[in-house]
Image (cartoon, rainbow, N blue to C red; front, side, top):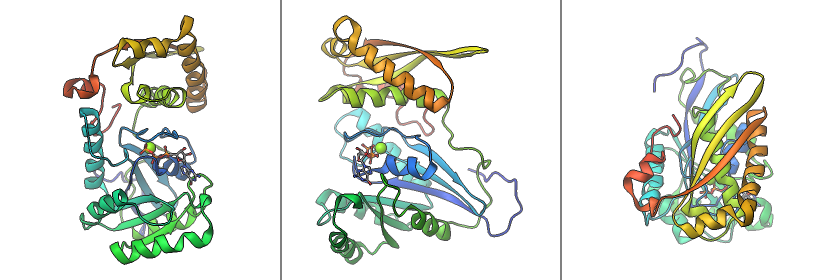
Amino acid sequence: MKPYIDTEKKNFRAGYVSIFGKPNVGKSTLLNQLLGIKLSIVSPKPQTTRHRIIGIHSSAEAQIIFIDTPGMLTPRYYLQKAMMKAVHAAIADADILLFMVEAGESLQVRDAGYLQQIMETQKPVLVVVNKIDRVKKQNILPLIGEIGKNFAPEAIIPISALQADGLDLLITWIIRKLPLSPPYYPPEMLTEHPERFFVAEIIREQIFYQFSEEIPYSTTVVIDEYHEQKGRKDVIRATIIAERESQKGILIGKKGAALKKIGAAARKAIEVFLNRPVYLELWVKVREKWRKSDSAVREYGYGAQNPGN
Ligand SMILES: Nc1nc2c(ncn2[C@@H]2O[C@H](COP(=O)(O)OP(=O)(O)OP(=O)(O)O)[C@@H](O)[C@H]2O)c(=O)[nH]1
Ligand SMILES: [Mg+2]
């Protein structure tokens, strides 16, 4: 992408920083904290993020374009393949690769395998050790030592994304490493994806929170209708796609109670995100085995370079 030129400022730095790591390590939490806005959905369950999500951090001296990605895994069905395609696109785009692990006693085998893959790209790698709020201070050093000795990344920075601890240091380090370049985006821009993309994601987030087992993984959300009306609430009609009739039954619940609960919580979160009132109507449909179908997965917007556009 060509830089967006609005400044002749010398010494301005700009570039892409992609965030990688196993599912659930806290990548999306970090993106949101860095931007100071909840852009990427977060849940206690792994595999919450399915797209590459762009978040733009602008300051007087630099513009960092962060890319949040789905957690790295070995794909078992087409949806996961599309998710890993998003990971690989984010590797290709990045000036700096940020690899995140969770604080713990030692590096787990899966982390080590993915970090190895990231190191092989030959791009600058920054390892972030997240969730340090959960461990004792003296227990962070052995892991840092192990990563340094076995992988020798350019830096290892311990943080707590949740408590916004260590983030200033992280930003300072990244800015120093970015190439000299004019900004790519106007400074007030926070993301590239349209509002309706985030609306679908917020509904999906509620499904991750309110349901267990297969349901969060077997569903996706499609926005059927979205229109703003002058002086009146925006109207949003969305469909939750499930894989089986039994899942549809659970999503709707007794007398529609479960669907109502998803709708009420999602509407509140959408209103916070958009900063205006909305009318939200939800439907549920079944499309059998959609996750295993190449064409269905693509139709629902997965694997696209810029999801939602
Ligand atoms: N204690 C603690 N929890 C955290 C921290 N960062 C994230 N979490 C929690 O970890 C869980 C997963 O966070 P996400 O940000 O969704 O993780 P992710 O890496 O984006 O996960 P995927 O999208 O599934 O790959 C959530 O419950 C977060 O609240 C942290 O610094 N400390
Ligand atoms: Mg995520």
